Amino acid sequence: MTKEEVSKMIDHTLLAATATKAQILKLCGEAKSYGFASVCVNPVWVSLAAKELQGSGAAVCTVIGFPLGAETSKAKAFSAKEAVLDGAGEIDMVINIGAAKEGRFDLVQEDIAAVVQAVKEAAAQKEKKALVKVIVETCYLTDQEIEGACLAAKKAGADFVKTSTGFGTPKDAAGNPHPNGAQVRHVQLMRKTVGPGMGVKASGGIRDAETARALIEAGANRLGCSAGIAIADGWSD
Image 1 (cartoon, helix red, strand yellow):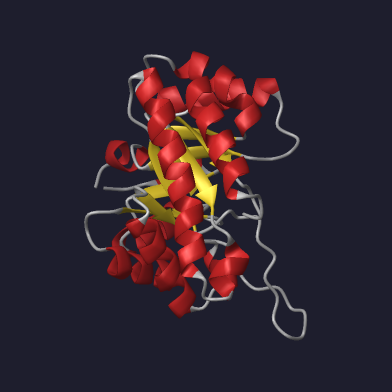
Image 2 (cartoon, one colour):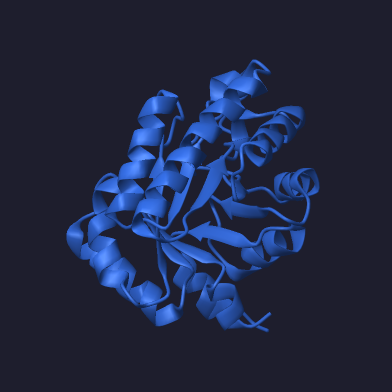
């Protein structure tokens, strides 16, 4: 796999609360220069990013229900529709994590389906296509819960499942922090669960080419990274 091919798998990401206009413009410039798949920004920056990336081939990705997933389905659907109308071509939504923990995957599926439908409607209005990626936030879930969430996303018609927000704060019983980003074994499990026809996005803590390669080999075909440039520059064919 070449540097150019890897670059086309990267969502160049800036989701910090402190992000400024200048930083978003820089992010967009880097995405154009490196040929990244998209920039991933908070909804407030979608219109600006869409204007900057017009005609470049890089999409605008934004996050919905981020990072907790605890908004109502109606709120998520409204926000997703607005984002697509503002110029987003990819929507990364966070599932109802509490419902997944309770094994209520019917609710998880309904929540995702509401966003998928809203995105389809908005994309039709704009006469374009838009993807929905579903963040299952693996750091909080057991393997069985990850499988259930991934199947719910598939049944709801989503295009990708995604590992993490990168903002999770999992801890063990003693209060010690656990990893909150992409793990190879989780990507393997997700790929096995959804099969070859659905996308798997690894995100959270991907800071170098070695880690990126391991996640791709595990089954990821998209990477969410704030370190996209370091990964691309450090890649060897």
